[in-house]
Image (cartoon, rainbow, N blue to C red; front, side, top):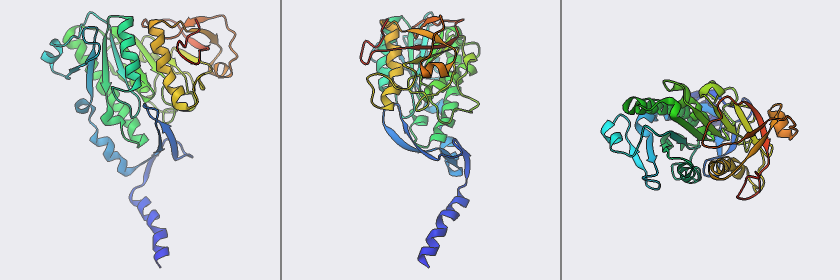
Length: 331
């Protein structure tokens, strides 16, 4: 009798907490790599009870915005949304370009993504660098909830940018939004919700699972110039083209010097950081992303990957080779 009762418990639980969405119709559980390089077994199916997790996240309240400039390159100033006196007392300068950094799933503002990019950006140009901390929405291992929170956080970042522009006279064209992993898609969501056209997006190995058919995934028209760097495509990173220009270093999946997918995924921001200061990553044009993945690219076009300045007007798919250790670029 006890055994018979136990076999019916999962069925009753399923009825009480039904599945309402499937990121993958066949695969339910999968190991995903977070922004710190750790693997987690995640549930790709969303239950009714998971909606409460989404409802508890309010990015307008929970997100924080951490400003770095050449005046304060190592200790950030916290910009408080809708607090103009706080903004005017900070080192934010509306005459400069502003770079928004959005971290990946289960990362934070002191992750390797931030540590690599903040000093590189400040060395490359006199810019405002603002790190978005959305850990309140990104820290759960419930992956469908993370995706929903990513969309809401992107909308909140757009409102923050609009407030900056209205308060200081800066314009959307001065903004460069950079996101890693799921933050790559959030960069697009933020940009498309800004009042006006954002000048530049760099998506660093934007996430694959959950975004293939997602209405809010990154799109080329999210900014005047949208560039994507694929370093673990088909695994942690998106496989197909998402930007005006898509770069596939080393074919886009396995990077020299790496032995894990987490390392491959992280190479995107290390390559980009190097491109800002010293690296010359010259891409060869490909017919499409399949040609890049297969390494059969013979079109005459050449284009530099990354950099502080948008290459507005350029388009296409490019491949290049890197070294296994810094300096990664081969010139």
